[in-house]
Image 1 (cartoon, one colour):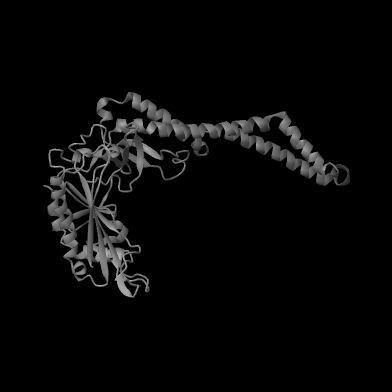
Image 2 (cartoon, helix red, strand yellow):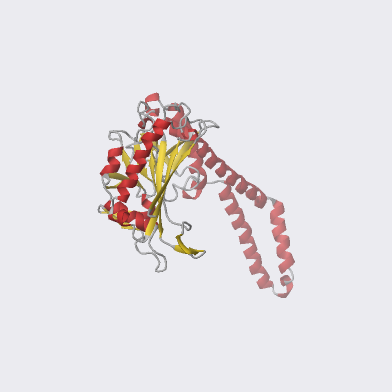
Length: 399
């Protein structure tokens, strides 16, 4: 047994299941992906390993999609995963059999499942109600290479997409700013709570009762020196007086943060909330629709006090360090096409197994397993990917 495959149909609530005709159209797609790998020298030889192939027809989770998405016409998602195991025979009642237990690294090809943020930071979210996931606004995934005619994003995923169609849509500045307000409010609340603590401390140390307590404690510990060692007593008394002045000065300064680097922890978040609120109120419809970008603060004092939103929002092109913010472009999918049509193909586990350098795949140590563990998992995946005819994968995607 070298290549074993199974097919499962997984239903999603609220999603019309694949019809018999749609399943009949999907199976050849999954078979083509499998055949592409089986046709490689590694896949053909099967020397020392076997592959468990997991094929699934899965409906797109309604929770992920916009509330207005027409589920009856939404593209079906389906996938095929490959689990390369090294050959291991076990003796069962006097008969040697291939073991089908154990662990390995899988790799899945997903059809019509949007890759989303590809690990990029989510800047803000926008609520879409209880029955739908919030809309996420995130930094645009970067193209980090090409392999076999497919695009690599963030050194993580390999993508075959329809030409001329965008996977990500620019995030409008107005929506991004509105989504940012709760985070800015939380930062401002954190600063105010911290300031309240400093003010309480200042009120305490400025009070006569606090000073009296310090002097009483000093006399309790040092009063005997007044007559036995007066010079020593006087020196310690001077230190106590300095301590009282220092603590009161420190408490007063903390309770009244200045508009400089020392007070940035307070004024940064408070000013950011006020500024964004004012900008949003004055924003014209045209400016609200402009593509937004995000520049993260990485140095002090600019980043002080910024915990929930660690940067500034602006329009694309405002500054070199301002990175475009995008959202998942659900309009990428053409709802006039059959639900079984391949509109997008993603190898999501690409970066887990390999790195791409100068157009060549280098294994993440997968070609050199521990001496007592035969090669399987990523080691087998990468060898097949190196020799695969990726034009077969590209040909699956509708033009």
